[in-house]
Image (cartoon, rainbow, N blue to C red; front, side, top):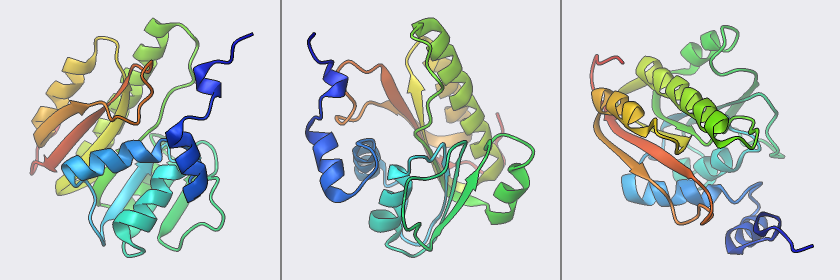
Length: 204
């Protein structure tokens, strides 16, 4: 039986292993950061769906340079050992009532980032609908917890709901764009929604 391309380590996977990151997804954030300057040294950052921890680790090591704060939330624990001193990690639902007071306590945030994906079923219609709902929840977190001028990045499975989500982003941010980093696999239907410059007082 032929090997699936997804079971074969590509250059990004090999590079992630070499550089000590849990997953190749780190290079998607790296590309987005180079294009939009989402995070700067000293920022307070919320990472939604943070596990296994590549985006959190890259944010700490490269973007914050150990100065600032990252609140990392996921249903699963981070696969980072040791966890950097800038990282405050919570295991739980970032959209639930239990975590919400903690988000308020550590916020507001200069940036919210999310590489979160729903549990997939193999049914593209179901999977994209779940992804759209997840992305919308992250955008709502942005409306509630971002500072004026703050930025947001969230993953989305393409499936027809992009324009409605972009409409929400344009309401909240001075600049909004859909991007597909080169680090995404060729056969992937994931993209990233980027909002830059949170407008003062606007809600979705």
